[in-house]
Amino acid sequence: MIVTPAVRHVSDLPQYTTWVVVDALDDLVGPDHGVLTLPGNLWWSGNPSFDLDDPAEVRTAYPAILREAVTEEDLTRHVNLGLLLHHWSGLLLPDRLRGLWEAAHPQLTTV
Image 1: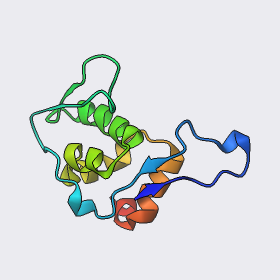
Image 2: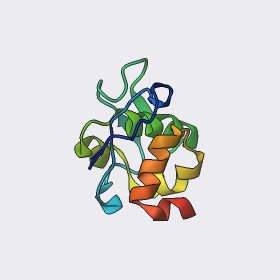
Image 3: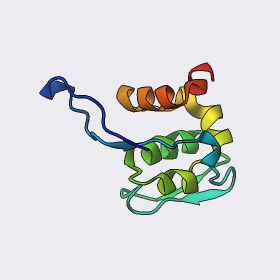
Image 4: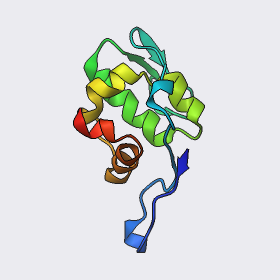
């Protein structure tokens, strides 16, 4: 599902006003180990490869994927549910984006 947050005042505009949230977390079947190389639409600065066995690299790659995804396939192809659940509370995300994911998937608030 594509979600556009409500904006009450121009100062409320997030950097990105439209984000994609998957309908079902079980659809997140991206790789859970090894090297993940992101396409240019998800990572355009520097080395686009991330070692998923390194927690710091997961915490760098996943926020970028969640912020930049424009289709559900961007998410389902690159995000792994197990890694997302393990790292969710440590991901640096815009408050609105975290809120949209947690509203759609309340189980994220308990991890």
